[in-house]
Image (cartoon, rainbow, N blue to C red; front, side, top):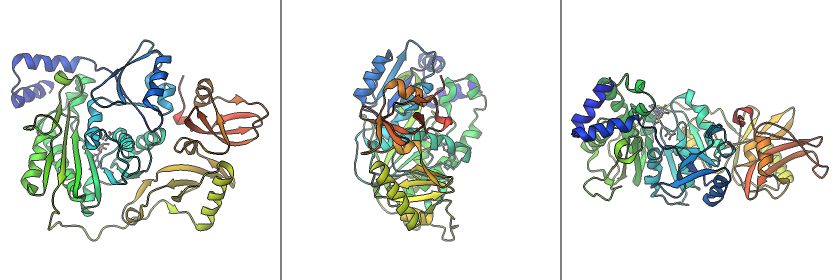
Length: 456
Ligand SMILES: C[S@@+](CC[C@H](N)C(=O)[O-])C[C@H]1O[C@@H](n2cnc3c(N)ncnc32)[C@H](O)[C@@H]1O
């Protein structure tokens, strides 16, 4: 099947012999590792200092100031198990795969409050990237596959991705809400030809029939996104695959049907070719495709389902009495005032800052922004991420050094001196909030759930 794939590439893109050899050689070459510094948690300067201390070498990339190539002499500990990763300072993301949020935002932080839809979001790399570019926006991160939800939750929590609310729909459902979102990212499910890097087996099932099947879904998703987009706002479509059927042909199909309703915004300097196509042998990256378009006019005669199932939320809005208790607790213990809303699910309390009234009525939420408390044995226990998602509290905070963070994030305890009375604290390292801990009988323990802990 790999040969079918290579033949397809050669015929479709008219590669000459040498280019074909370069292409094949590039598929067999390991990619340089890249990481993105999560500026929600740490500044690029502070991260560079950490990298220097760890003996990590960083090189700039073409995709913004916080995306780096990384080289490490000592690789005995996988990057995913380093303190920097567990603490959410970094995430490993392939260079080209970071490009869709990069082009959506033009690499600029925009503090306007938008409603953004990330239509197929798990594991959440691009969702978290979007929260860096749009710190005040409401981001609906949607994922159809329940088995991929956990990764999405974990990544958005670990990276402190603000104002992300998770839904679980087939993306084709959003067309029932015309002109609802200011920006939409459709990082579409695709045949994943990029995985050819990982193993030859990845192309074992490559065939045009499969690709046409996926392309059909991609067009339906794109159409749904296009309808759900507000007029004069933007949609980015991306895939990590190379064939034309899932890329240019999808856009051509949209043009055939809605040619008067949108225009493509050029992402490249070559005005005759407005989209971005990354090639393994030209860009030393995965294969990747990005196109950005702006909607010019309302699409008339849209058939919207009116008998939509009303969703019973798992979450409930906290009653006034309970809300008062939570607010008092937050003020008394940490001097925290939260302007937003509280939600409850089983014995957990979640906080959300954005006004989601419209979505609350229509959408079923799988996760609200951030879990802050758990009620156990009639007592409130702060969640670890209460201490990472907000600024340094005014009360009950405790400075920790790198060694203490390492100990706590590995699940070990630290004996404290007498000045620290029993209770809950937010820990912080310099100016970076680093989580919530509990001190009991002079011993400090992190409240981080074991699944997030550092494996050393
Ligand atoms: C390329 S991945 C998304 C990667 C993600 N944007 C990121 O950056 O981490 C495509 C995702 O689309 C989801 N998906 C597949 N069919 C879908 C559908 N009909 N509606 C919404 N999402 C779908 C897949 O489960 C998969 O998680």
